[in-house]
Structures are given as C-alpha cells and as structure tokens.
Length: 343
Image (cartoon, rainbow, N blue to C red; front, side, top):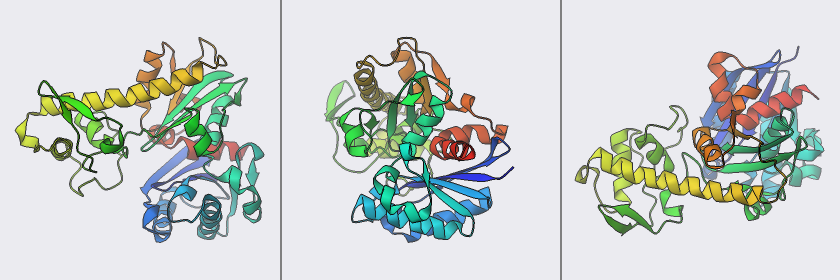
C-alpha cells in the first residue's frame, strides 16, 4: 500500500498528515508567516518534512495564495504550487481543485480558480462521505468554515473566499490569530462600566482562550502580539493593555471574566452565521454539527446553542491514538490524504 501525505499550505501555517494503510500515523503543523516572503515556506517545508517523512504521493491544498506576498490569487496559486512541487520532488504531487478533483502540476494554471483556497471543500467532501445531512464547522487559528452538507454533497452558495464571506460560510473568527481590535467590539464590560477598546494589535484570541484554560496546548505556534511569553500572566498583560491597563491592576478572575466576554462575542458571530445557513431550509432539523479544527471546543458550544448533536471530526477517521487529535486540528490535510487514497 502506498504512503500519502496530505498538505495544507496556508499563509500562516503549513500542515501535513501522513496516511498509511488506511489511517493517519503522523501529523505536523509548523508556523509559516508567508507575508514575510517565500523563504518562510521553504523553511516550513524543511521543518515539516522530517516529521512526516517522504511518501509515494503528496496531495496538496492551499490558502496561501491569498497572502499579500503575491500580486494576485492566480499568481499565488502558481507560485505556491511551483514551490511545493520543487520541495516535494521527486515524489508525485497532486493539487486539489475542489469539484474538479486532483490535478497534476502542469495543469495548475488552468485550474487556478478552483485550487485557490479549496481546503474547506476537501474537508467538507470527506465529511459528506460519512453524513448525508450535516453542518460542517471547521474552526482553526484564524477563520471558521461553516459548510452545509446536503445529500452527502457540499452545498455552499459560494466557492471563493469572497463569495463565502458574503454568504456566512466563512467567518474570520479563530482561536489563535483573531486580533481583538478587529472583533467589531467598541465597548466591553469592565469594573461595572462599558469601557472602550484600544484599536491596537495588543492581544489576540489565543490570549482569551489561554486565560480561560481552553487553548489546546500545541495550537499556538505563532509569535504573540508583543513577542513575549505564552503564559497566563503574559496573556493577562496583553488583554489588560487593550483597555489601557497593566495586568496587575486587577486579579486573574477579573481578566478571565473579560476573556469570557470576548469568547461570547465570537460565539455569537458564529451562531449568527450558522442561523443564516440553516435558514435556507436545506439541513434537516435533526442533522448534526460536525466539528473540526483547533477550535472545535467552541464548535461544540455552537452545536449546543443550535440544539443539535455534535460529532467530532476525529470520530470519522482512522488514526493512531497519538495522531488523532492533531489530525482533527489539521482537518484539510487529513481529508486530502484520505481523498487522494481514493484516486
């Protein structure tokens, strides 16, 4: 049986899942701040490849083409594909083009619009192999995909990021890299008053969920907003700065209460998006929410708000025990590997 590595090439992370004999055996996630230049992607591959090893077949999807290192999305698709093929040579490499399936490197340019940011389609298509009717929600470090599965098929109203944003199928809400200044909140409850936030990159949702003790241990692989430690005390200081305070000016419980408010606002945004999708009437009232990504603990709460059962993406896959959780965190890489095994 051949070995397959599924790659999800993002503008902030590079993720890889190794498939052997019908199951995921190794998973890697490394930081890849591609906005700093293409050298970051070379470096990320050099870190990830020793973890997952070589394979007979590499199947890749991407969102990195959106990065402002590229002049356009098409330019980004072609650039990322060329770099990936170079990094993974001499092994065979295929690129996922959504409903058009997998394509060889020589066909990337002709399928660029379908290859661009298609990782969500891979994960949702895999879920459709297991559920005829469901709401698939993948909450990662930066964004959340909300994808209706109808008749075992992906049934979105949009395909590109722009069209999915307009239809509530893509929400810029994640558990690590959502910066609190961009949350849309103008005032927060603090000390019995509504207090304005500073419009500065002082803190992110990683600080919120770290203070609440909910951030998965290995989910945050990027630098913090201030370049300091990833500790409760450091997160408390960053959150306090959003209000013009220092951390020691209030106790931990006070900052945790504020963190709960930020988490609540983010959950409301996801709930609104889910209700918009459900209002189409295509997903049955008893259909489950299938949750994936590092933020699936938030997705589970979303399912509760929607009065629906919750199914963890990890329950749909075969994986070694030590790789299962991370395989779910990296759902597109995992899904790509399984889908490629069927080609």
